[in-house]
Length: 319
Image (tube, rainbow, N blue to C red; front, side, top):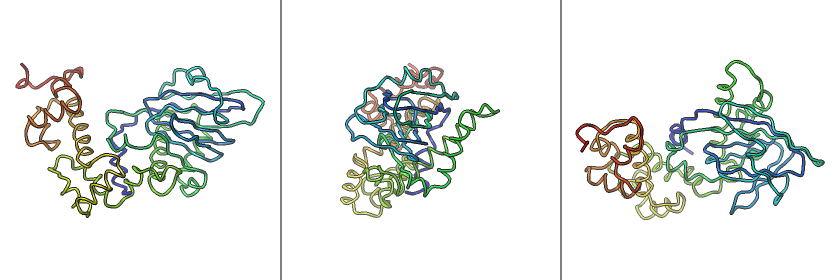
């Protein structure tokens, strides 16, 4: 995967806090968590557990394995598949960013020790490509052995996770942020049991990856399928078919998603007039931009902006 594309994928997320916990659970046990508004990581220090997501095969995590949930997807953790579960909220309520907690579940069986982190980020800033990532990415112990910086950071977190030292919250945030970035780099490269997912192959594909980088960073240019295919160094038909197969949508729809994401950000964070925003995101006319925005979000650019406290339309746009 192109390193620049990984940077562009992650840089807008604006990680702003992490809640982390250390689990010691003895079988039988099972916990079910609802979808979280953060990315999640689970690192198994000792023992084993099973991850279950609705509609997917259970994933077995063993000592030294790491699971990353880019979207905080709802899932169940248990010592064995199909185990009865209790809500995560009953075991670990009020998971405030910056805090650290210990969880102990008693039982007569084998012990599982895990380090878990929830990395809070600005979901609105997540690119369409980031949103297309799988619900879970898994790096097994062998994959981590080939990532000494990632393995060393996890070992350091495991040894110091609950120390109450000055600046500890910032240290934990930066350490988990490093784990998150390194784990994604490894999973989107050659490692990880989820590496065969189509969107991950798209990120590693030299031609499609070049087009994705162009969409992510140069969305304001007047792209067509033909010019994106040229950027990728492929014929139009081969590019369109390969892009759809790997990314899961047509090239121009992916481009529109990126443009609309940026347009919404500019409406929310700036007082730029609509015509300036239209030009920045690649539309030659305000009418075309308005039509595309309404079709995408179900409201006008002005209606979207009025929903954001403290941001007003320029005087020339008020009626």
